[in-house]
Figure 1 (tube, rainbow, N blue to C red):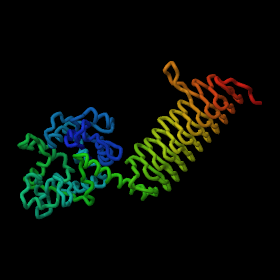
Figure 2: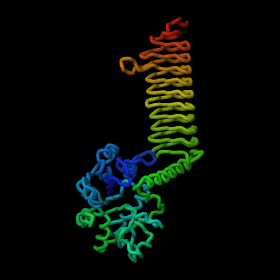
Figure 3: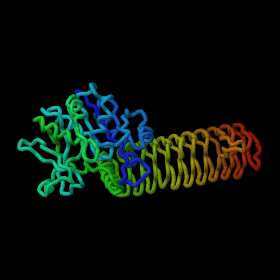
Figure 4: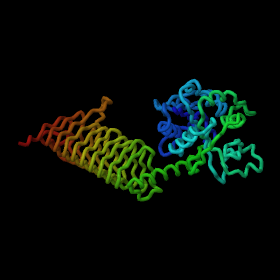
Length: 448
């Protein structure tokens, strides 16, 4: 049995009142359509097919090579959308699983249950439903005496009796592939000029074929995004799920209500996350760390036994036993090796700090390599942007002492065990074991 996954992502999402396509709005730091593709990658046997339309180029750019695409140039309904995938999928799968990209709370376990149910279904289709008091505009499910689905009645078409039905259509469908391609083009155009995928239910029933349904145990999985209110609701639910998973895995969240962790983040056991902390993207944090309060971390790799206090880290690496803050800033390309200490209000960009380096407060290190056990005094700045509008590097050796308020004008090399006096403006290379002082700095002596 081979599974093809189809994600419907062509709609504009008018009720979002946004220039951004609905499926590119983010939940837990990731666009809705990226959530759907990540889920599909755990289920299907090939790259998912994403049906694009409004904002197609932007959606494709967001997904890159993680999906294949079918274009629905005219939005003529869900049935018409799936028709656009036939050329990619017909003859390549035994089951076709279809759902909308605006359902970020769906789980792989639920989709696998639907697939397994369809595998044992004598009929061509298994769908998902929920039991709920609030219909939220979903169609009602009418059941046959044997438990099969007889019909989906859209909310606007319900009789007073049907409005009392509590079982609702969620919008996840698993089809027998051969039956789908044989019947899909027989869907009739609605009075609105659209082709609805749900019409296949009535077509199967008319053929005396069974339509099965899986009732979701957790109704929150059925939350679809049509407005920014729904977006906030899904955000809260998904973050709660993530935080519970972290705590169950051995991570301490002092205040889960003010802790925001993305879906792709990993955190080791016995790490403590303090309040008002946001951790996003492909961030990996090791064990026995303390992070926060009031910290933002995006796409970083952090080792074990690190401390991050009230700081911002972006696309940076911290090895083991590193501490930073409060009010530190690691920018893209910052790499702090084992045992580095970085004081408050410091900033590092595109630089490697070797093991045991100490960086004093109010310092800026950019485009630099600093050797092991070097001390960078408070207020030190690497002046890496020159009058020729180019960035230049600063190379500092091991066991160097840079005095407070030193200005290091790149390109510059400072040898092992060298020193600079406080307030020096260093414009020329400093040899090993030498001391440089003054404005501009001059080498006083080379220590024996």
